[in-house]
Length: 155
Image (cartoon, rainbow, N blue to C red; front, side, top):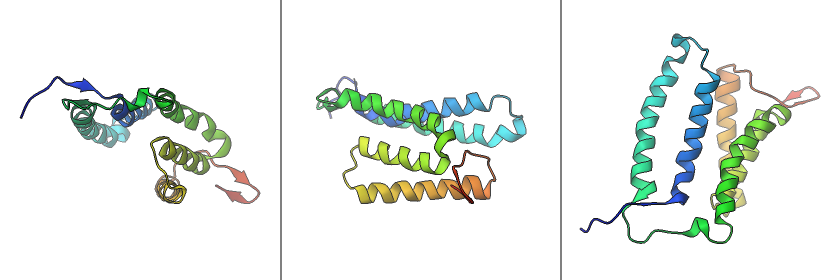
């Protein structure tokens, strides 16, 4: 097996980049929390960091000779910029349209930008992830996330 020079694949760096942005943003927001409250997130972050480094070293930096340059062709660079802007827009619109709707729209847009072709599968995955997050974070953990109030309903 011939070892080649490691190359950077920007298309594979999107998901680790987004997860790093969300992780840093989470710990910026919770910097005033007590050690008792933040103990489990630190443990999860340490384990996720190890997995994140594995993803970066095995998928982003590759020694394969055939490196795809697809992200820089046609609309590829604008797609990468949109994927990095999507979490910022998601956080910005959440107080106005609520956690549930913002999460669903964010996931739908992200799935489409990442190459999802089926609206039904993308919608099903986005809806199931949004419902899971809504039930676990709002109903079970009683977190006070932004909600859209329409008459007697809170979404």
